[in-house]
Length: 218
Image 1 (cartoon, rainbow, N blue to C red):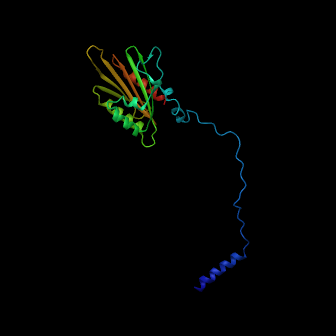
Image 2 (cartoon, rainbow, N blue to C red):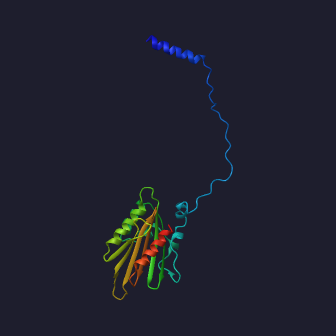
């Protein structure tokens, strides 16, 4: 015990003989803010959100020469939540699902050329809680795969994006047979849905060309 007490006392004496340590003042002069312009904002090529947060309709393919805008196309190229839900067999159920999936907006275009009709939709989600764009594409692909007499191919550069050609036409007395093809893919928060209808069989080259060019714009 005496050794511990003696050592403690010695320590206090040593500290008492030293010059007091000078610490910096807590009050510092205000530093001037750097002048000049800030960094230039990133371009759309460097920051994808610059492109996808703008007018979504501008990312849709343009109708080709000689084609006319689809007769059913209205709403200025937009589909609201209710309109998009109404494209499903059970709109009421789908409306609730889309609210839960954080539906943000949908842009749509379409054209008619001869007996061929094309429709393209870009469905954007907020994706704060789930990866809804990927889920939407998975659902679309499930139903496309479920149709009989169907061929499918992966869309290059899209991961799991898939194009489909349905070889068996829909038939109805008094009408020409109706062939169809479709493609579904997503990139980040946007799901792409594409359909082609024609009175003649639709080629793989046709649906793949449209799908690839549309996804390259996202």
